[in-house]
Length: 284
Ligand code: HXC
Ligand code: NAP
Figure 1 (cartoon, rainbow, N blue to C red):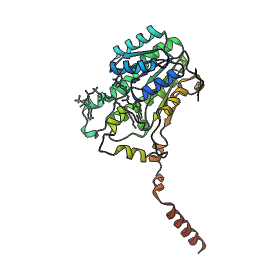
Figure 2 (tube, rainbow, N blue to C red):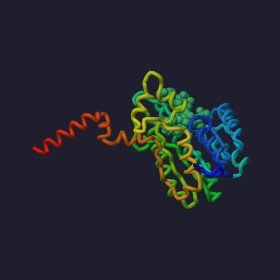
Figure 3 (cartoon, rainbow, N blue to C red):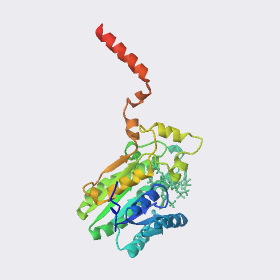
Figure 4 (tube, rainbow, N blue to C red):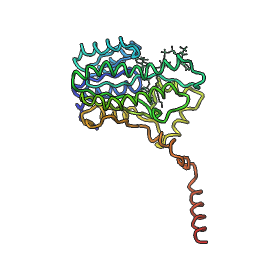
């Protein structure tokens, strides 16, 4: 799909890059020539993933960082610059989430998620953005989700925070374009990862089956599909795309939006009967 060295000499910083979709993106970017920095709270996870990326043959830096803490974020940025001299691309991927009836949430639970998703994205964007402004070039990609604009019950902290990140994406796309910084977002539907599924699809709720049945393409996303989309958006090839959110969900959110989409449950034989009746009544 891409030239083998499409990301050659690029330095990509990925928060939450030790697991799940962040790890998949980091591996893919390295395969395509990028040097990557992955950062999150769990040092052992980051170290393990970093050594896997190293086997691909690119330079990799694994940093411990809690994106909620601005001092740690500033250290992450200076450690990256000490090592690589520049940051071309920031992927705000780190997230926290869980399902809960909203009336059972504590303010601490709401804050835990919003601090990671919204404040964490802001902290990284601010710290890296200042460097990108000096570099006169940059590219920021935020990972949101489709309920950033539809909202969703039972994940109110995450939905509120992701909506904020989407607003931040569109705001900075305009404000920082003058510094030659592009800002975009990807909105994934369901992709299987340990982190998301153990929190959002606990065994017993049959969530996996329910989630799949909501997707017109009748399958979950493949990590490579998302990584390839991210590659396009961070590459020079998408140079005129700014302020966009690209949905990658097999048609899931639109299926929930159209009033008549449930009519797929009507069997073909019944449609045929209705057609015969309609023609008969027209002829009478
Ligand atoms: C209600 C909960 C809770 C739960 C924690 N809390 N889990 N409340 N239901 N299941 C509350 C606690 O009671 C506490 O409130 C507060 O949240 C902080 O809890 P901690 O455990 O101390 O938080 P912390 O260690 O900082 O962990 C943050 C976390 C955790 C968000 C709670 O889940 C986490 O580390 N997540 C990181 C990875 C992750 O979530 N990945 C999934 C992303 S998937 P009090 O009041 O006692 O202080 C995703 C997909 C979206 O975003 C779209 C899918 C289609
Ligand atoms: P995941 O593996 O749990 O990824 C979340 C990552 O964020 C982890 O690596 C975690 O690492 C890191 N993180 C959490 N809190 C952090 C903090 N305070 N500071 C730094 N890093 C932190 O889940 P995922 O499914 O791959 O999710 C990746 C992204 O995709 C998220 O933005 C998520 O909202 C989005 N998304 C996922 C899906 C899906 O179906 N999987 C759908 C839509 C959107 P540590 O624990 O080491 O900190």
